[in-house]
Image (cartoon, rainbow, N blue to C red; front, side):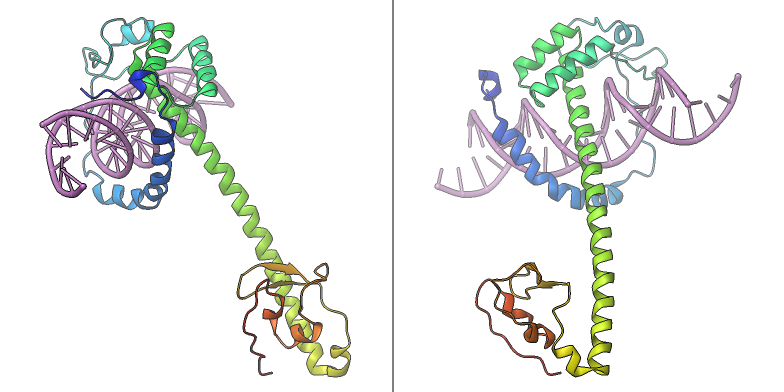
Length: 227
DNA sequence: CTGTAATAACCTTTTACTTCA
DNA sequence: CTTGAAGTAAAAGGTTATTAC
């Protein structure tokens, strides 16, 4: 059969970790719809696995990766890893989240598990890590969204007030100091704070006239707005 | 050189079991 | 004792990269 780099004791972290990661972004986007379309109408078939005694003892020897047997009733009995086994697996995971076949076999032998079980444990462990990270990212984005919503509300209010002021007292409006606001360059979409951005080219009058392009970091065509 | 089939490794989703409040 | 939620081992089915032909 094929002789992979791992079999030679080489790490394939680039090809086996990075590449799938790039593709799983697409998977995240498209998998749910696909899964929905392909969702079976009937429950998935039950599958036989390692017998309860073998699993519980965790001492099942024998050839690697062979399918386990079934309980007499075909029911799936679930292995619970001991604390020691979990600790060793966790340590190993911290060291390297993916295993090459040699590491996997060594770990399996050390723990008295099949290497398939070690492999599955690592798969699930990676999935849990990713899920946790997704939750963290989601929480962060939620907070960002709340902050931006609040900022948007504040800015809308400020715009309203300025418009009202301009109508009521144009002279006073022209001579007031610039508002505490953020300005986004329409060209490069960078946001700058007017108050501490002293080296930008825009003037207060520019901004009052809606000429926001003046703060751009690169030259852009500025078309004064009709007001 | 290119296309293709086989294979390994990994990922995501789902299922089923265990534990615990 | 029952029940529902959470945690997790394992299976299923998918994608991608590699290799041989």
